[in-house]
Image 1 (cartoon, helix red, strand yellow):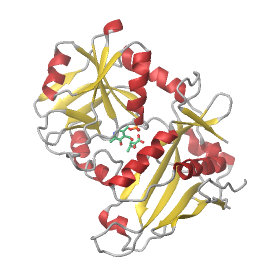
Image 2 (tube, rainbow, N blue to C red):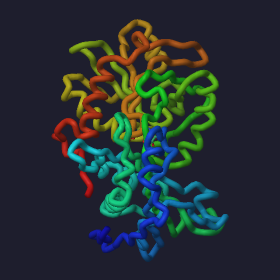
Image 3 (tube, rainbow, N blue to C red):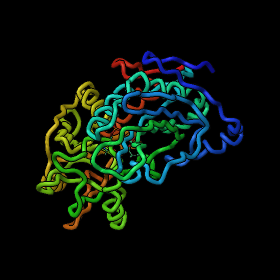
Image 4 (cartoon, rainbow, N blue to C red):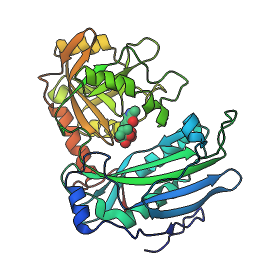
Amino acid sequence: MNNGTTTSGLTFDVQLSAQRRTPQERAQLLDNPGFGNVFTDHMVTIAYEEGKGWYDARLEPYGPLTLDPATAALHYAQEIFEGLKAYRHPGGEVACFRPEANAARFNRSARRMAMPELPEELFLGAIETLLAADAQWIPTQPNSSLYLRPFMFATDVGLGVNNPSRSYRFVLIASPSGPYFSGGITPVTVWLSEDYTRAAPGGTGEAKFAGNYAASFLAQAQAVDQGCDQVVWLDAVEHRWVEEMGGMNLFFVFGSGDDARLLTPALTGTLLPGITRDSLLTLAPELGFAIEEGRLSTDEWRRAAEAGELTEVFACGTAAVITPVGRVKSRTGEFTMGDGGPGPVTMGLREELVALQYGTRPDTHGWVRTFG
Ligand code: PLP
Ligand code: COI
């Protein structure tokens, strides 16, 4: 493989692993990978230092990072990440869905966490370099893909907390993955979290910041205790406006057939601006559905579902794609969406989105980027 120079002048130094898994070992691992459990043979790393900028871009064998115990990220959680997928298209091309949008969001998260921005060409160059080495790890079973996890963390050594770190490391790893929920696209049951808050106005909710996820695990454990798959977060002030799920945005479908209309919670600064959400805001009107960014209270959610006005609810995100929500539970009881099964609007949108991602429908939006 050739080393490529980016327009920022950095060249990815390529060190191929001497311990790449054999085709047989890879085939075995790709057989039933689950989500986020199996990793490819390589990773990309790029270092940053204030005054010097980004340097030392390399592809190297996947393996442990050696860190000083006083590394800033381990103490003060200056860490951000992204999630996107690589797909094998029918003609054999390797493609990602809107990776430029992930690069842009990564930099918005970086600004919020007082971290340096990574030029888009380095973000995309890292993906290209890793895919050139590890494209055979893209699974080809239905609903499978290579999940890409770019992240960046503070590497200053020392416990002072007065200033952000002056050095950082960017890393990209890749994980061949099947569906995020083990049930595939069977509807999930969700728990309304009235005890905990994910994000408050002025906080870090719209950044893809590791700490947001750390803060969510207790509520997620509570959801599981209640027999639910996922937690639904409410606003921090009144605890009544629906925001999003642990790693997905939400859409509500009112009515049915040609009269169906969709509502998704508006981006108030406390939600993660999902790229899937944004794509659906374009795709839904193209399929003839009215769509609105607004707000929905938990009382209205329940009333409209029980009255039969709210017919479907679904969650969407890179990992979860589009997953129907069948049932909602809270301290005050539980209720069902429609007949509890996947609804036609949900499944129609899912089919459209997946066809674009997997390259079985022409990309009329300029969303697909091929590599290699
Ligand atoms: N909300 C949260 C908290 C997330 O972690 C994610 C996943 O990235 C999403 C929503 C959906 O975002 P996207 O569609 O860009 O994957
Ligand atoms: C994603 O969809 O990429 C996510 O980040 C969700 C979850 C795996 C954290």
